[in-house]
Image (tube, rainbow, N blue to C red; front, top):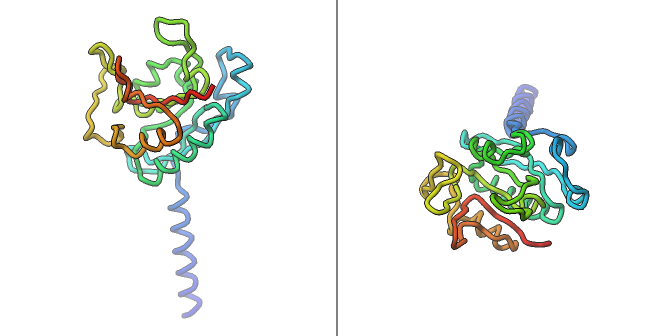
Length: 201
């Protein structure tokens, strides 16, 4: 009898361990894969790192994604995504933008959270903070950019009551600001609710 009880306990522990370890993989690239297909200046490339992050998606299941970021903010983003996971703030998915042909519009249209993207500002020749790995966009469909009455991405809406939406009261916004990041939701000329950047260099 004692043997059967022990066996039952061990089986139960094993079952719970399997359940706890179950993670849906949204992205599992190598670093080289995550930056392929685009010419990146060596001054930028040598400072980039690929990090794994975990989060609960809108299906309420645990997922693993990846972000390409500047090495100086690796610690910040790992800490923040631990909090995102802990409080179960939903992230639709986080996949390096190479999967979408380095096209920000395509990435946003599928509600992808992304960081590094070697591109310049729209209608300008200035390199963006995304191009340095010092910016991240979170849940673009819940947190659009609103500029001159236009909402980007197309079809997105900003509703503070919806899960996955960032507001000035959000713990995630506070955690970014605590670490010296700027949030586009506080900008005056336009509101970019998905966007955080850290002006470290």
